[in-house]
Length: 238
Image (cartoon, rainbow, N blue to C red):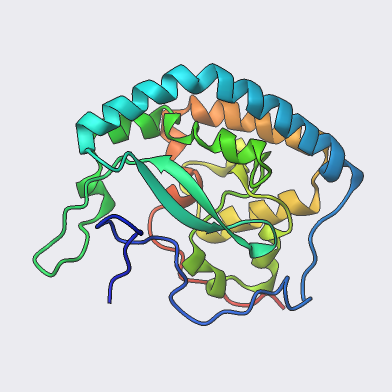
């Protein structure tokens, strides 16, 4: 049976596809807490996201209209993603793919469904602008591990689960020396490193990397879920 978003004929994305025990709810892992995270980082998130919401409102309105003409309704695409402590929240993006299927009724590969407008939005990172609303409300942060698919949760080893000890963010950019080809293990280890070393200085470094990444088209594909292939899991770290 295929699940669909309520009120639409679009497949539902974000649901778990197997049994899973949340290590934070079970007490195996704890949320990362510090004065910086609770007060300084949160204050910065509120101020910056509020300014971004105001400044990008005209751009979002234009994108919404273009998306409506390009793909029709609905304009937004809603995913359920794991947030702080792996508690699910809904992330909202502008649609950039058709819902074309093959002869078996299965969705075609993303590369075959993305529209020209969608490619432009991704290359320019304009598809991320709506996330400032989630940052303002406290579901996300400017800098933090990118919220990936719910179905990946059972596939993480214990160390990789630590990426959810802080609020998810727009990105935790990899170092420049990482190159253009990055494995899932390297990407997730970078997220855990961020959690272990979170500070004002670390966030400044990550923000600088993020700005450079946005304007570097050659390295844009190493952003979070745009890594080639699906994350299938790794062996437990002893």
